[in-house]
Image (cartoon, rainbow, N blue to C red; front, side, top):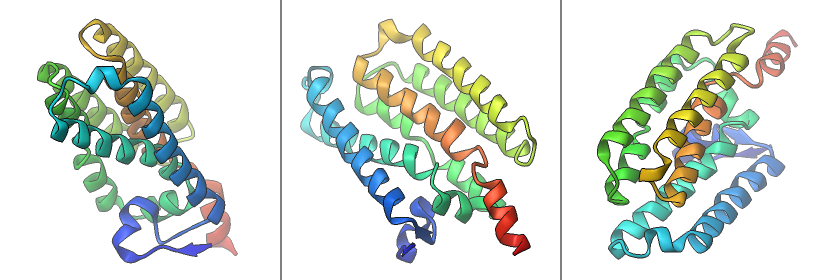
Length: 187
């Protein structure tokens, strides 16, 4: 396990397995490069500062998709209920995406509201055996909502918003390592 500097605890936990850290970094960088290259036409007409901000948001969101699945991050938030709610509340990236991509803000607000509501409900189901199924259900409804708006969005934004939904509704809000943490507590 690698000890994570305190400044990064909220995104990576206190320690990470080397391979998990590698997966997080590789996915964040490769998916950002992929989206930026293959869908550059979707953002090329925006001011440079908007493009830079969208790329930074892409790194944050895609890195979080994998980081929030890791033992280190999941374990860090396991018994920090207040920190979990703060983590959820500060995730306004979807609103920022719509602002900086010059897309209808009302769609970003709808998606943000839906995500916040679902993430809070999933927190209330923290130790429920049906939490993963509920998260899959909520994520799937989120997919339908995004695809309902797809004619008003760019492909770059659709993909980024889907990663955002997955990051918050499945990667973060689901307790992925309960069994490991229970075993750790017992031993």
